[in-house]
Amino acid sequence: MPPEPVTRAAPSVEAAPEMNAADASDRQEETSLKLREALFKTFFTGLSWTAAARGLTSIVTVARYIVFVRLLKPFDFGVIASATLVCTALSAVSDPRMGQALIQQEDRIDPYLDTLFTTYLVRSLIIGLMLVVFSRPLGNFFHLGDAYTVFWAIVPLPILQSIQSPRLISLYRRLDFHFVTILNVSEVAASFIFGLMAVLYWRDWRGLVFSLLAGAVVRDVLTYWLFPHWPRLGFSMAHARTMLSFGLWFSLGILCDFIAKQLDNLTVGHLLGPGALGNYQMAFRAGEMPVAEFTMSTSVVAFPMVARLRKDRHARVRLYWSLIGVVAAVGLGYAAFIFAFGRTVVLRLFGPAWIHAVPPLKVLCIYGLLQGILVVGRSFLTGLGKPERYVIVAATRAAVLAIAIYPLTAWHGPTGAAAAGVISILVALPIMAYLLQRTD
View 1 (tube, rainbow, N blue to C red):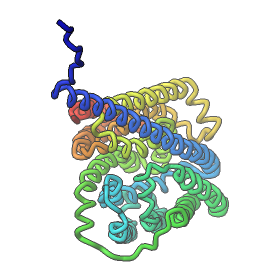
View 2 (cartoon, helix red, strand yellow):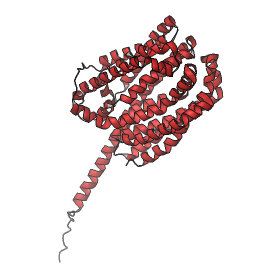
View 3 (cartoon, rainbow, N blue to C red):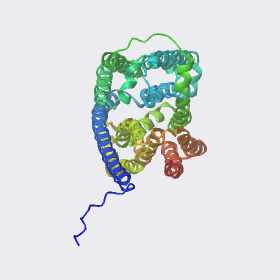
View 4 (cartoon, rainbow, N blue to C red):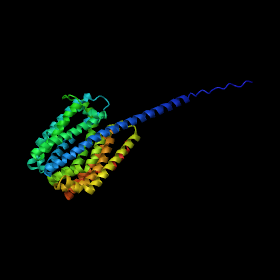
């Protein structure tokens, strides 16, 4: 009897789809991995450019500040701080944050640009009018005397900030951040050069105002050179509604943030006068600068980056803890340096007239570290399309500060104001952690 022929078993009908599904899954995972690697490469490239921009800007800013501090008095810095505080407060209250909505917009942004430009121009004109009308009452509130005219002098600043090229928003959509270096460094350099000439000429706060205006003019010119667009006055309710749907939540969070960051300045200026406010402002900037520069660079890049990583929780978590680790290392290192050598640094760089800034400076180093962690969390919540959750964090922080700031400032002066800021962030951070944990 002949042997039966050996036959090969045909693959089962069910096996082929399983193999195809496995191959497809492998290809999809490989594609996802390559996309993730490309995004992280883009992120770190963007972060390198923004960090370079902030680093160079910080160097020029510190040099400018040291020179101006040597030429002027704490009173002059208190005067300009009062004016910029009111100006930025009005801006924060009225800012719809429509540009942030366009960063997440998947469609073409050109149809939205005229509405964006017109809205911000009208807003800036209203702010300028309010500064002129209420200049005397504001001067009395901050005890400025005849220097209340600083509110007139600063009127052009919000207008200049509003008329930059609206196409600048495309920089953030494309994660193309090398232009940030050009804009930031040019603005600060112009502010330093022209401001120095003005300070030497006037020898008072008017030179500081001119410094701000000169920097804003140079930035405006560069935005039109780098991002050409001829804006027209026009307004579309449909386009405005689309931008406001995201922007208003973001705006409310930023407004609460502004209150939490500026209520201490307002209280110090009102209770203790422009001299104490000048000292406090110097301590505030010096205390938060290293961490603030890093987190500002990070938040600019992290916001659009996180928006692209919405469906990749693992990558987001890794990115988050990497950024928090750097913030903690920078903040703790700088705080240790200031606690050890802060008095010597202030005396050597700024002179004995600024010695009262040393106690709040030490507290504000801790504030800068905690604030950096909060900023990173804000970038992640807004990048995930959850700006309403950050409003909860910012509102809690503002409420705590509103309760603590007046008594602590009245009892302990600028150091008490700094301590109130630290307490407000310590209360807000656990809420931030909880909301981040529940983003998926």
